[in-house]
Amino acid sequence: MAGTVRNARPEDFNEVFQLLQQLWVDRKLDKAKLQSVFNLSIESENEFAFCYTENGRVIGYAAGTIQNDYYATRLCYVSVLVVDEKQRGGGIGTKLMDCVKQVALKNSCGAIELASGFWREQAHTFYQKYGFEKSAYFFCLELQN
Image (cartoon, rainbow, N blue to C red; front, side):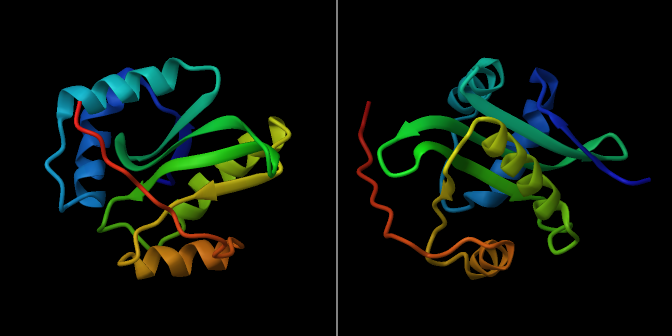
């Protein structure tokens, strides 16, 4: 059975959380906080969240924001793109990114941006193959709240 990309739904969270754990193996994730972020993103008009499902299982997830930007006028920022580690390399990431691109075009975005950790070399290869260019360093200042 071929998989499909669809909008994320509240009941997808547990499977999405498992994917996020694969993405951020070096962090202790707060499930309650992430569920709150997930719920806000699927309810927001300026955000998007897609699930790739196959045989009733969520095996890929992409989420992000449409925002104003001084460089691109409108910007599509991808905050998460993850495919189950056992399914990577099979075109699922491309299908998810194609949906992201459609959202960006529909919202008159001048660019799609994302951040990817230095150690994620396979992801970098994927992004460059898709057409992304390395354009900047991404800086982060974590705050305790």
